[in-house]
Amino acid sequence: MRAIELRSDHLRVLDQTRLPQEVRFEEYRNPEEIATALREMKIRGAPLIGLAGAMTLVLVARHNKGKSREEILSELHRAAEPLLKARPTGRDLYTLTERMLSVASEASDICSALEKELERIQESMEEISRKLGAIGATLIGNGQTVLTHCNTGFLAAPGEGTALAAIKFAWRSGKRIRVFVTETRPLLQGARLTLWELQREGIPATLIVDSAAGYCMQRGMVHIVMVGADRILPDGSVINKIGTYTLAVLAKRHGIPFYVVAPFSTFDPKGEVIVEERGKEEVLPQDWGLKVEVFNPAFDLTPPELITGVVTERGILGPQEVGKFAKD
Ligand code: MRU
Image 1 (cartoon, rainbow, N blue to C red):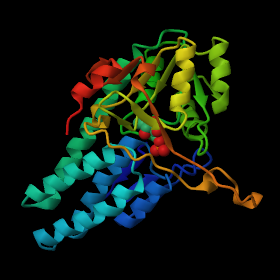
Image 2 (image 1 turned 135 degrees about the horizontal axis):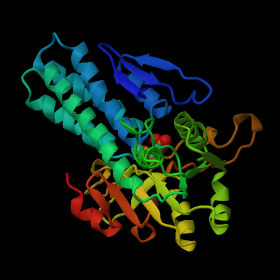
Image 3 (image 1 turned 45 degrees about the horizontal axis):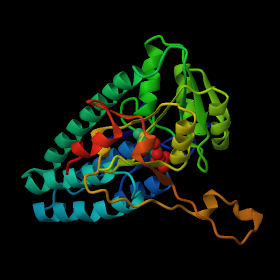
Image 4 (image 1 turned 180 degrees about the horizontal axis):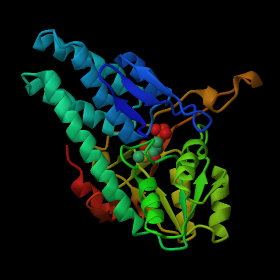
């Protein structure tokens, strides 16, 4: 099963807001609809968001095939605008959109150049996911319990995902492991999506509320923490789902290794990050009738001193080494 797929004239999307109760696919034909699906998190996870952006530009090129080169280019730039605004924190959406626009600007046949580029992007993302899985799996010992946050599986990144790929590969290699899954307030990506993915694989999993992580660590129930990243800054700070920083502080307090599993595409040489803030209705039910302010940041920043290592497709880096590899 794929979370998103480009068909001839539409994007076929597994609506993640309906999981785990319902496996329902939707079809989107234009960039505005896709930007809305990104904002509503029907499509989510930094690498998958990036891929959705690249696929959208192919759709736009196909829909405008008969037009002049200049017209197609301007349609592509117009389409990129709402996409880039939809989820501002993850790095992949920017890099892949920029990459597609630059390919288009140099191509004589824009549509076929973008289709070929998309194929390359997709193949390489899947290959990277396999590498992250294989390398990350070596860090998980037989009999260990891994704690993971949010969703970092195939619902978040093409292939098998990032941190969840490592967990799946460890399990497939015959290690008897258990996974503690934080529910991941407020949208429950852990409870709804990660548990669904783990159940499909038959991997033993235990759901905990986010605030139970410290208690579980204190009781020796967690051997290793593995999370993904939406963006990694040149100083090695990791931007990831809100709650990641708290987990890293707790892991440090309890001497538990804390690994980030992320492709090089997540590394940001400039370190410019917008931390997305989402609506109050995600946290405070409207029908409570309470007129209060809600601060709902979707991501946080974990500084490098709390991170044991960053698993990349080229090996495991110390968090301080990350900056050396970040390039435009
Ligand atoms: O808000 P989301 O669900 O898109 O956030 C996803 C995460 O924070 C993941 O950990 C991150 O995208 C990396 S997973 C490949």
